[in-house]
Image 1: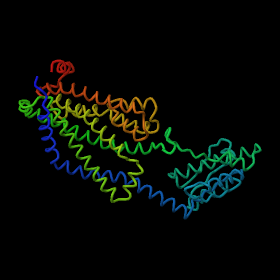
Image 2: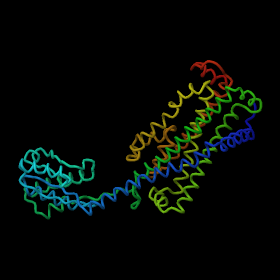
Image 3: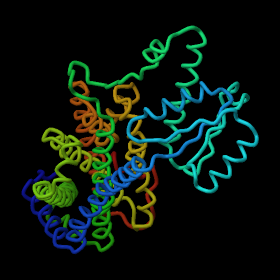
Image 4: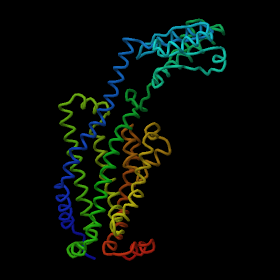
Length: 424
């Protein structure tokens, strides 16, 4: 068995790196991807600006809501609470009693655009607590939620008044609670699940993009050299382990180069754009978080590209190998489905176990770090398990690669793969 040569790995990695960096696809994706990411950041701002303009429009012409109820005191309570809602202005009015003729008149006013909606609170609606809100703004969920809160307040306040409570006691009892979550031991550090989900979504986009491009690129490179018999020539100068390691490191360096280019563009943009600088500050992207990002990206790439290299050595055609692409990235798809649950409950048993699972930890452990600081032992255990899994994957994939790149013809069976592992 020949000695593993770092110099040969360097030569192979350099060749792979230079060949990939000079391609048009690399240059194009390097500059197009930041544009797409910019749109990803700008679109929410445009939506927020549109919402702000809508709120300003409501302030200039408040939404006209009619509350029709047999009990005028109940309607007045709901109307007063709706007017006290923060963030938007409404112009509620009360109609009592709620007669069939009044119902028909309100329908006509709604059709004519004189009002934005009306609440129908007859005796049956008050008894069942099932209230109908007819409106021309059915998509305005904020209005519906605030109107529902106002009606709930009115029902509770009237019940308390009927039981003998004073108006002051009612107001004090039903005063909303302002709740802010903070990290344990850090009184002024707000627990930000939204930030964690937003940051990890950006990471997952970069991770999946890299895997589907550079991971598959490793697989295609292996299959192209295998089908053209170039591998047989290369094996005369380097071992199979050196060849596979060089391909993985060279192609991975291309991915790191692209990420470095994106970070440089982001830094230049932040220095010139107030909006981009504010977005980075809001997301809380600090140096420590970027270090974790680079670490988990490199380890995640090493794990999945090693598996892709083995897949490329096993099969003889791209069509056969592509059937296994979904199987390879299935853990990442499962991790992406858990992003929101982990963001809202990052210390639950399921979140902890999933973030320790090596095939999901590049996404989920980074998300937990973005949301709040998990225990140090969990981060260390996650990294240890991930590195150990990479070592095991390199060992298994190396044995498969050593035999598979010289095998042509039919697709190997499970028994043949086991034989490769034992005798390679």
